[in-house]
Image 1 (spheres, one colour):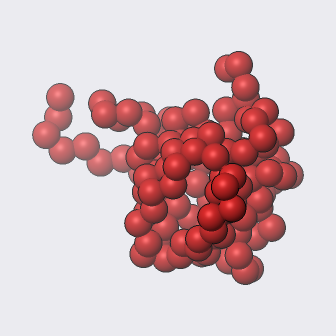
Image 2: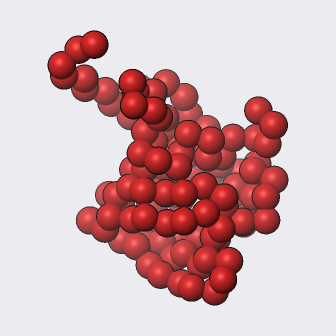
Length: 123
């Protein structure tokens, strides 16, 4: 194993597009598991643009990561709400909906929950 690994998300191992062209997930496979960069376009909402892919009532992925740009609102299944934006660390449990706030894409890095994110159910 190399002591230094440098990869670029623009040359990801896999890219998963979101419904209606509202963004994408770029995945890099590492020795420690997948790391993802998601670009959520303005107007993106999990329940509209990922739910049809995932086949669950709410997002069942846990997310631990960092917001590079843009803003997002998260609503947990129990009603708890929060917002994340540029420079924020995030740790979000499974069971939530989320959507982009404003006119800027929300770009987030996640090293926990993107491995199976936006992956069709059963694949």
